Length: 455
Image 1 (cartoon, rainbow, N blue to C red):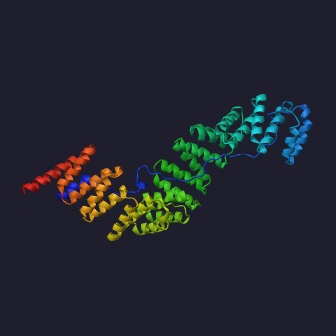
Image 2 (image 1 turned 45 degrees about the vertical axis):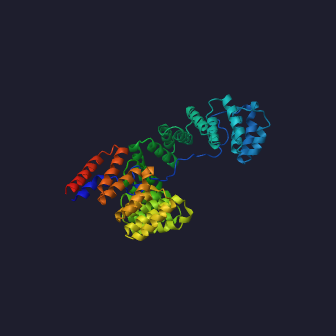
Image 3 (image 1 turned 90 degrees about the horizontal axis):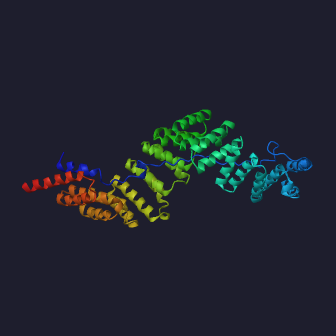
């Protein structure tokens, strides 16, 4: 090993390398699954004798109203009830009036009437339940949650009330506050998909991974052809950093018919991480054909493929991106031409690489990535004068200042200009004193200079 190679070792670990954000340790995978949703029931119907009873003198009116309701004449029912003052009506008949208002989307009148009912019967479960539904429709989720909670407190045992209370707890408070309510709803309606998904979401968000996995296994065993269950398993696997299980689960969901672009992209991303480039390319092209692959994603995937020497596939992606190049931002255009330059460099098409590096910098003269990449390219071609020029330009970009300084120092070492290298390294160490390894490199370079002078 010669002296120059020994000197490079501590520097190269810090030198510029154009790597996509997909390769970072905090990588984000975006998987789309159906979320738990509100389940709004139809009009709940007439009063129930279990909850409130009509007075004896109201029986004749009640029978007449029942006939009107059976025939769907709700406005006629309301007209009949409007003949009476609210104080003349029993809580049951007043409750009926509130429900008719609700069914006719007269929400303000319904709210006022329900509240009047509760003043007279403060433990009437149906009034609390219906008010909860009403506030849901008015997007007042806090009031909706409070009234569902009161309905449960006063003895409601309807699965939909427990399920909606669970959803609102999950949305407004925490996952743990939703688990028991989802479990109750699921106990009452074991086949309800919304309660299943809600419980799974709550368990997962609460980081109860063992319980989530056990529940998922049960769901998959009962319905192995449900792509949503497999997607949820993929999410759970990613949260536990099990990318192989995540990928297998996503592939199963895709096999079962899931064709969401976000999921295709995430599956491709996982394939890239696991070096299965052919399948990654298939999924990328599939997402591209659906028109859902944005320009930035195409560039990111192309960068992955370039780094993996899958140059033909990268070229195909960049060709696809070129169709929309005029419509994207200047920064995106700069990134696009930078990728083309890196691809040309890999293909040893050096004149084309120079053209595309310059196009990239024409679009964005302050792009740290482009400045560093071009400087590194020029240095590798031993065009040290031009390389230094672009390193110096990169050094004024705060995000890449350190890499640019180290790159310039490495260029001086490669060209055996050790005095200049020492000067730059001292500047680096002054700005970044945590890089104590540089002191050893500086000492080595000083020894080389002394040995030269002695010789």
